[in-house]
Amino acid sequence: MASRNPQSNFEDFLPIMAEKLGGDGLIGELCNGFDLLVDGDKGVITFESLKRNSALLGLQDLSDEDLRSMLQEGDFDGDGALNQMEFCVLMFRLSPELMEDSRLWLEEALQQEFNNKFH
Image (cartoon, rainbow, N blue to C red; front, side):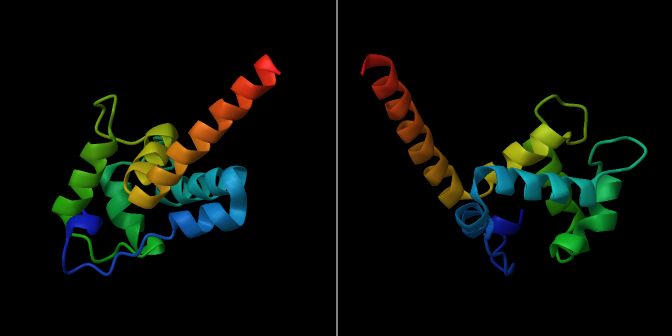
């Protein structure tokens, strides 16, 4: 995968996007990314659609093995493809900084909910 390939120039922009766009904006952009990679006939990202469209997201240097690995890592239901939810979850998982930020956001939201219930 890109983040594990020492020859890759992968740079994680998701934290910057989250900061600038907010949660709803980030989800919207992830959905746009899904739409760029999706197989229009099947409604999911397949290996073929990922390979065909990966250059649109700057992933043209990934090998077939990297692309297959990415699909497998995100394919929670085992159908060999990524639906929109699987894609979004995978993008979060591939961004360690965003994962850490999301934990902090969750803690803050839970604390706020707790405070609202008991005050």
